[in-house]
Image (cartoon, rainbow, N blue to C red):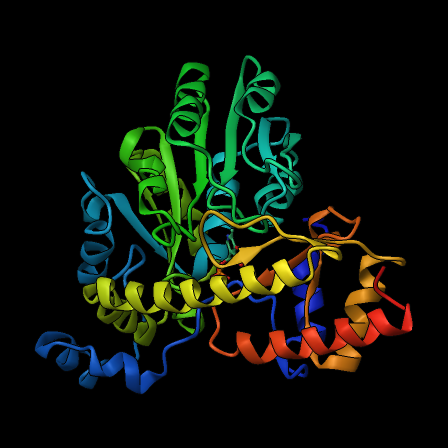
Length: 379
Ligand SMILES: Cc1ncc(COP(=O)(O)O)c(C=O)c1O
């Protein structure tokens, strides 16, 4: 298989674990093992204490599938297929459902594997770019005009990484209808769902509103367990799940036994874990509003609608990559250049799901103030 480099992971592999402040991560503050275990009830504590480190079931632990299904209205455990992270789920559903030459429409910018895996399968790709600046959002008309007879898949990532944008309820329903009318599978990467800053903007899961759609979910972001590497597909399309399960036999076979139980514990306490993530992101977002208001001459701040990431645009003299590099070296703060999302021109992804954001922001503030005085980068 020929597949392009996953740019973001090459960037993180170089810098994530050696830069003091990672201000561009998309997860929320990870729970410690001890924190997770304090949430266990009698049954899950027993499952943890007596856990066999054997292989697990291909479709996932029955109790875990039940707990995941409980996050969706109208779905049952039979609609859930567990994976090792959302990444494995994306790889398996694309490989299971696409053939070379199939036409696929993807709304970008988005998580690169959502178009790179179809491309590697040999799909005929229409990448439809959404606005990332003023009035950023989803332009459904643009997606609709890319759909044609025989389009096999329409792929969207909302809440969006990197912009934090959400379609409106009406736009999301238009997407559902577009997919159903054209006979395409709606693949909805919704891993930042449930972290909407205005709860009224929360969309239904695609799998809840359409029998031919598939929702991608994961424990990594809103539930604070990225190291568990535990994700899933949710769909009422049994054939799709079976095809993806067939692919999974070739990737990971089954999820890790400890991760399944940790995910079960977190999901049985979903509201507690989600409230924790909401409190962190709400507080950080207030700080970002204040920070970007002070630096309005230098940065165009587009407040995200949901999730853990945002995509402000810096007015720079040089390239985005060289600015990011300078901030990393001089301030010890890691930012992510928009180039990895094919959006150069000053766009930078920041993450606001971690507790050390205030310290990172203070360092970035010092850097920006210092460089305004010298007239160097940025500007
Ligand atoms: C939109 C989106 N989908 C999928 C993934 C992959 O998630 P995981 O690394 O937990 O498998 C990411 C990771 O950042 C993402 O942002």
